[in-house]
Picture 1 (tube, one colour):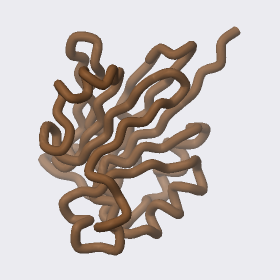
Picture 2: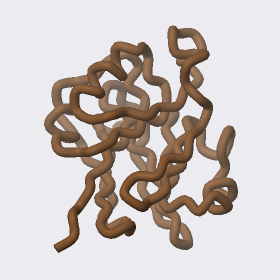
Picture 3: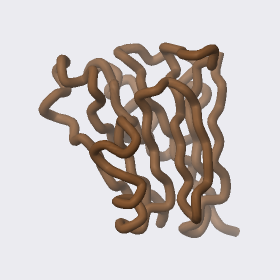
Picture 4: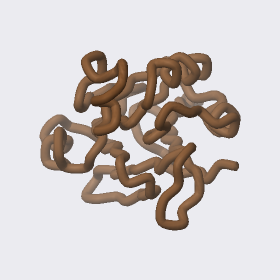
Length: 159
């Protein structure tokens, strides 16, 4: 029986990690943060759940994270390749992700959850767990991987 690996997706925390994030991301083996982290304290808090990789967002340019976080990253988790950036199409385009063999493209910035599939590439905006916009609730994303294949992608509304 194959093992299922869960990857947490989060964005636009803006310095806060609400309690609901801990239960929503319980059991993930890795967290990918798509920017506007807010402070290194957020990464420390998320690190209590699972190892974290993050990119900087536009508001991180004014924080202690400005020089320590990349503008985009490509991460391999359990045989699945993730492309992570803050603003869709800016530092890393969908074409860049495809050329790099990515399976999942993660972005943030809008605070509006989005989940679409486009010719074999999952495109996910996990929304924001701390600041809502346009009537959408607080949210995070979870990707399940088995045998190097994405088996499930969802955006979870959290309390």
